[in-house]
Length: 106
Ligand code: SF4
Image 1 (cartoon, helix red, strand yellow):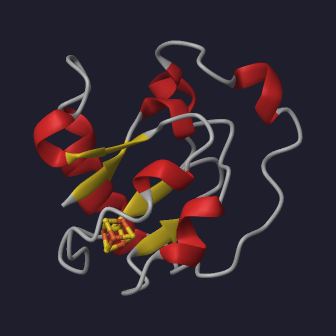
Image 2 (cartoon, rainbow, N blue to C red):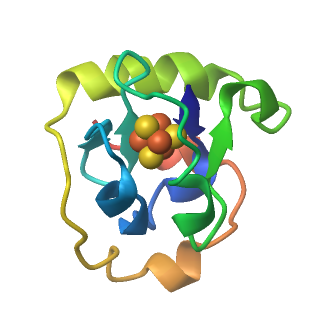
């Protein structure tokens, strides 16, 4: 499966959701999550993310391994998103800030 990681938090660019052939993306207040039971590893979403927040499960950055389970958990709780929308208003300011996990809203 592919995994959305820390850098998505507080930015939430949604370019990825439009290319997913199986509607695996789910939307929360300030993060997107991929449902691993839907993802077919097509790889299409990975290059769409302007801030490189999406990784294959086997290639998640060190220290962010817990995002694999987190994506699964949050995807179950949140609605599907299939249409691109504007990023969060202050997305630019939050790009590439470390450890945004503390700011994840559920
Ligand atoms: Fe969807 Fe493909 Fe990304 Fe999996 S890898 S979430 S199937 S776009």
